[in-house]
Length: 77
Image 1 (cartoon, rainbow, N blue to C red):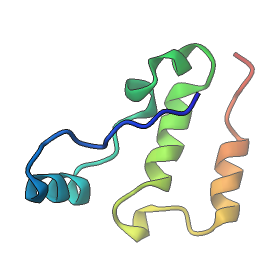
Image 2 (image 1 turned 30 degrees about the horizontal axis):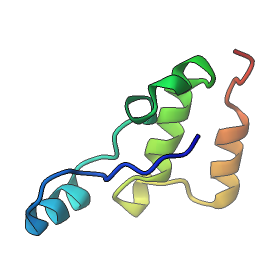
Image 3 (image 1 turned 180 degrees about the vertical axis):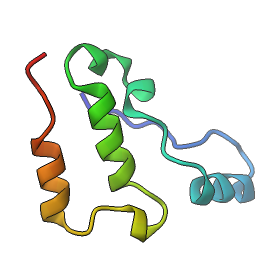
């Protein structure tokens, strides 16, 4: 199930922007712990971290590379 969770909860806009720009995205398993029972969480968290990296050079080089990383996940849990 998808859910909306604000990325940060500070009220001051300048703090929100600084955190959004500089802090990594939290692992999916901390946002939706129920996924730990249904998905290859450590692997999925790694792929998502690369997909959402702040610096472009830290992301996958192409959509094909991202797709291949997702296809390698072990969903047999």
